[in-house]
Amino acid sequence: MWKVPKMWEGGECWIIGGGHSVPRQFDVPENIIQKVLDGELPISAYSPYLSAIHQKHIIGVNIAYLLGNWVEIVFFGDNNFYFTQMEGLAKFPGLKITCNPNADKIADNSVKRLGRLGHKGISNNPSYVCWNGNSGAAAISVAANAGAKRIILLGFDMKLVNNEQHWHRMYKRKKKDAPYLPFHRHIVGFPQIAKDARRMGIEILNASPDSAIEVFRKVTVKEILDGRV
View 1 (cartoon, rainbow, N blue to C red):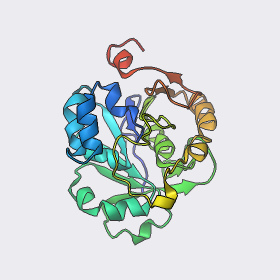
View 2 (cartoon, rainbow, N blue to C red; view 1 turned 135 degrees about the vertical axis):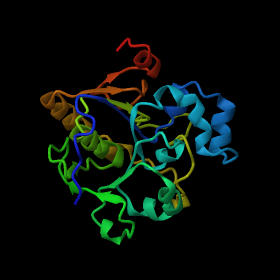
View 3 (cartoon, rainbow, N blue to C red; view 1 turned 90 degrees about the horizontal axis):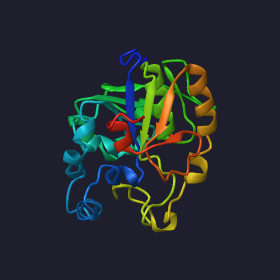
């Protein structure tokens, strides 16, 4: 197994999840958002609008790696994601990290393997993450073990926005699974994450102002970039 190095000691990390607020926090025009949703434009069409964070430390959860090569890490917990994205991931120049317990099925040795702990919260072991029921919450352990002291959650809405679950439609669900709404189990780990973050001296901000997660301070991206928080 791999061990997360202290590469961001005392620094800041942004974790980009799948919630639909991502493009709207950067004022992406609605017609561009719709074209991305409809597949008329690639996900990277959002990239110019997110230029203000291109130089930040970024963990892209799952499909977020497609936003651009400025994403520093792609993190995923589902092997199916890897096998559907093998071609794109092979071209991705950043770190590729998974916590899937069946990662031995992945032949790509460039994918770093971390262990998955069943309990909630933030792992203080750099070779493990606390799963918390979803990849976005698990990625917080990666940022913490990398030494980040400020973690900004982006796209952690945990609810539908304009009847959309994500800022893309890359996940193909069977009709019997639609609408696939796992928010009730995705959200349960955040209270313990908040407790662990306080104990570890880590500030976590939720840059999804209408998020269903209530345990972190909610802010806007503009407030962060303007230095108001």
